[in-house]
Length: 192
Image 1 (cartoon, helix red, strand yellow):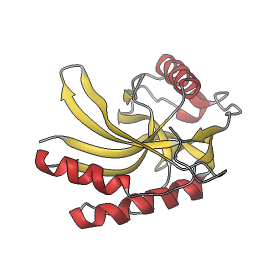
Image 2: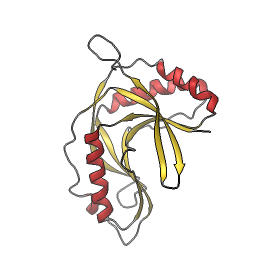
Image 3: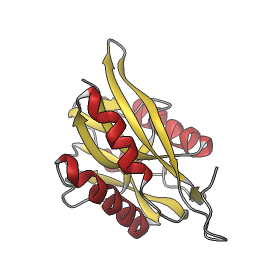
């Protein structure tokens, strides 16, 4: 039974910048952190979980019904959940395009409602850097993250994807099941 989620892919430039941030933090922190690995960056719109194989085509058909305009998105600042003193998750928030991301997530939820998937509660678009498993050696996350903020380029969101997540000995592998183009504002035609 595949585990599925819907998300927005990011550009190679974003991948490179995010990977660089993770490598810097990995060198500054002694804490046990499950870092996001290269090639796995995305903004999750809805986590679907384990899905019966025979439902996958129906889910793809439902996602194809979404008509949504392409939009600009830009990463913003590094955030700590719940706080910098005892973080469980480190992530980059979405500064520009966050409201539009939320609207796209709501459109996904709407077409997925027929499948009884869990609703997004307090959805906030973001890019996860890592999940803190255990804080070690008096790590100060605020100090470790100092100087990492940067001016992020605008990323034009032209599609979203249905992903399959598979657990392996090396960690999770994400595979694009299908990519769904958004509509260009000029002329309202799907981006291909």
